[in-house]
Image 1 (cartoon, rainbow over the protein chains, first blue to last red):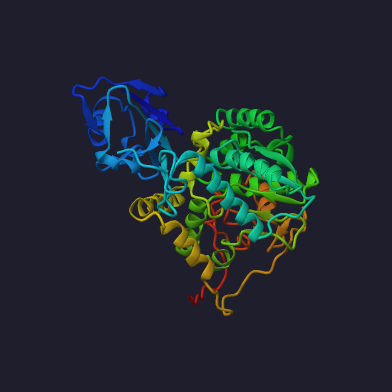
Image 2 (cartoon, rainbow over the protein chains, first blue to last red):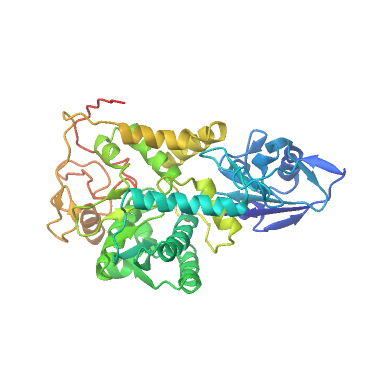
Length: 93
Length: 349
């Protein structure tokens, strides 16, 4: 699968916008993905991206370009070849 | 698990709308959002036919989506507006130069003329130079005060009748909360106005007053609009940051919180015992001000005299009442400035 970051979030990931992630099972949840991201990708200032088990409020999550709120938030399933996009809304406009 | 759009019943749901909870497809989302902005514009009579309208453009998400939607609606509903983009170059290297490139691309993409005005031209100082003088603690005060005036001056220079800004519902809720937290009753009472400065030469309006930030960002993402999203390199306004996080936390639990805060703000009735500042004009530059000198002139005075803290710290002898930077300027910090009004508030709902 692919994880993308937008809206300034890429700065937390060493300015890399797209990451290819190999899943070790057929299907995981967003919650598990976030744990993996925290342990493997997040280079600095975790609090800008995560809060508790979830993303920081104000960070939008899309799975294959669909709002994760339609798919159960943290419980939303992610499969191989899926694309997950994180967009921060927390900056000036 | 794929569900149909609750509006058209045909296409696949793409997002959940925060204000209503409706789950809609992309196409319906675009249509509904644009219709709502159109409704806000017509119900509040934000524009008159033939007006020349400056769209404040920072290159960020809000102003980019505003430029896109407003030019679209102008054609679709025959508003008859003469639109142009107005940008301010604060002179912050590594931040504004990049975002200005975005605005320049918008100029081409939307076919709307662009005017860029710099702090250097207007005030003789770039923000980088100001930060060298003042340090990083209070620089947002300068920037906020200067930007507001710069936009007005630029719009006047371009003979605009009105200015439209991209302030969204989240910004509005945040500002209401901040004014409440600061006890700034004068601003609390006027910050919810969708149109300000109607008595002056250049009214300002906020077509996105009821539009959620989430939807603005989703709109920009789905439409692949070109916007710039790096935070200013100078220190962010911490107090506003807390208010922002608080509102986002509330929204996560109950998305309607944002429109409800706006509703509360609109319905406040300020008691007549609260003394309101009298608006006049600055004796030096003629800009609207409740003091003899406007805030920008006081700040500029300090800079040019080598006393950059003038107008920022609470000083005897210098009235630091601030009637210039209206609360809706996102980065205008007035927290450090005493506001001299008697603070009696009575609330009626």
